[in-house]
Amino acid sequence: MRIAFMHRRLAGGGTEADLRRMASGLAARGHDLHVFAARTDGAPAGVSVHRVPHLRAGRLGRLVSFAIAAPRAVARERFDVVVGFGRTPRQDVVRVGGGTHRSYLATMEAAGQRARVRGPYHRAILALERRMFAPEGHWRVLAVSRRVADEVARDYAVPAARLRVVYNGVDLERFHPRRRAEEGARVRAALGSGDRPVCMAIGSGFARKGFDLLLARWAVDPPAGALLVLVGGDERLAHYRRQAATPALRDRVRVLGPRDDVDALLAGADVACLPSRQEAFGNVVLEAAAAGVPVVTSRAAGAAELLDGELATLLVDDPADLGALGAAIARALGGDWAGRSAAARRLAEAHPWTRHLDEVERFFAEVARGG
Image (cartoon, rainbow, N blue to C red):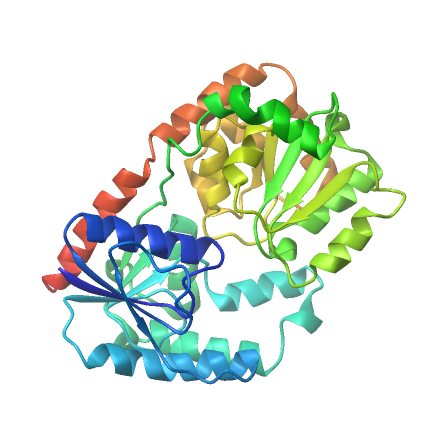
């Protein structure tokens, strides 16, 4: 198949990483992959990348100009399937890896973030989203979880027949329990954790991920005496670093910022924490599980749909319930940790990246046939 992907960036967070892996994986299987992007750094191997000219002044200008220019650029050539990964008004498949912006705004406003999620930029996203999910804006929707599919159906009345859920997968070799023995001691020494257990929170957009809730929990009392490590990017990263430097948190928290070695960092972790307020999937859930690290997350995360048995006992219904959050983390660190670690690895082994790629490939072939 000749396939086109559209997204403003190739380098960045989870969606960008998924795009690169999906594009290079499909290209390796013999498909002709083309990516149309405004920023082309981080191009996937074996993929043709096309730079889409766009306005450079301000995020609103970049958003709208790319949304207009990208579909026009794609339309100059013939493709069997056109996939939009961001806010573009026309494509065959909308790949929803971050949930709907409408639900995101509602969630963040409920968390007291209204001042930060209103204004022209967010109104423009909502307008593009309405066009994207209108019948003429897409043929099918590829959602990364049932939670996301339900969100799209609820917010934009997309019929169930147009929705397909394909869970993300994980690289089982990059994230592997053996790395704990090989690299764990070095990572823990670099963090200065001493004999304390390590709670690793990894992701971009700290408020949406609930990392502020973790800081509030640690300010009261670190569960099981654990060291909290925050990893990832956020526009208010300096604010979080200042907060971590206050007397209540100074010896309890490390804020590392963006890192490209999360696989190594997980080798030094005893529990991964993702108490998200809104989370379409949460790749770190499967990454931590593949590394043999039990995960405490909220039911708002799409990946929570995959957790069962003892792993499901680590889910929290309301991430803002700091007592329940602390209890779940303490439970993850206590008792039969080795049993939970083995269960986490088995879960990940049921969701390898190759399986994800198989399902996506079949879905795109179905769309190309007009199904």
